[in-house]
Image 1 (cartoon, one colour):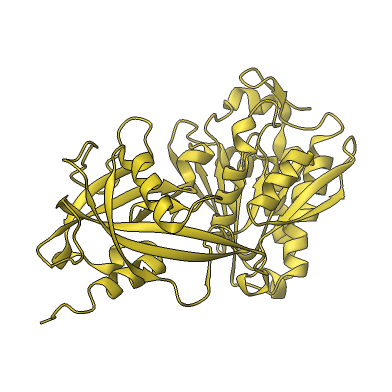
Image 2: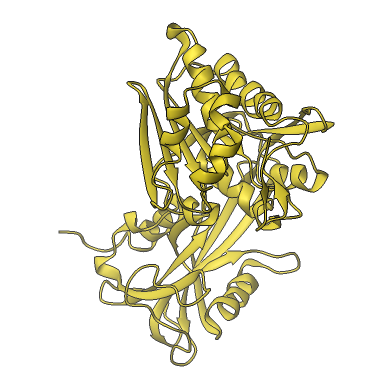
Length: 382
């Protein structure tokens, strides 16, 4: 027995057997593989995209209980379900019976279906949380990272926005080093998106009705070889016009707050170098694209001297250049009065900050903090 979503035109489970598919993909290739292949952890944190009938969660609970005490970690299971299934529907398909657990335990995870957050203690050392959120709402505000992700969204032809490189980059950021993501989908475009996001992807035999499935592993940073360079160019934009060659504690500088890869980031304005341009060309182009107006570019202030690995793509080494700059003309862009004051669909906002009061810890990236310290190294401190 399964359900079909009228919203997405997709069945919740394989017609070759809901329990069979869940056991093969999410329990065998996910939960049990994690327990047997990774070093023991005090707490195993699992994130599920698409709780649905709760079958994956209930099967996880059952197999966690079956794990010998000496190998059984604490369990924290978090499931995202923006469209909870009504109890009247769940009663007709009996997910508890499929999972081999008590009916009360199935009812418990689906209780308070309208609640934005619902938490149930499964045992002294296991807990379940259901969030009435979609993936995009969750990723930027997650309070913790995970060891295992059950990526059980509807198929790419129904929910294409969930199977992109951007989504898998967010999943990569949500996983601890050595964590993994499992899914029933094995499309080539999905596998390539995972690889571009920094995952090492395994193609595994699929459950009945599917030739293959995918398991994506986030390797430890130290085990990820750096394969290419990523050159970034930023500028310290000092308030006022002209061509300053210095900055004082009384000056105001422009800060950029952005939504990047599912995270809120505070950084200096600027971006990536493109083929056919030098660092100065890049800074001028980025100013036009981000601010909508030209800047007067001053001297190079700082360039990364050590080896820096990208936080988003660990296979990339980042090289950063930082210039001093002023506007050419009065500001033509919107100024925010507080951090992350995005307007409409924008994912970037700008604000002035007094240089002498700026805390380097404001910045998300270490290279930005290092550059700011290089710029202000001559200032007297109390």
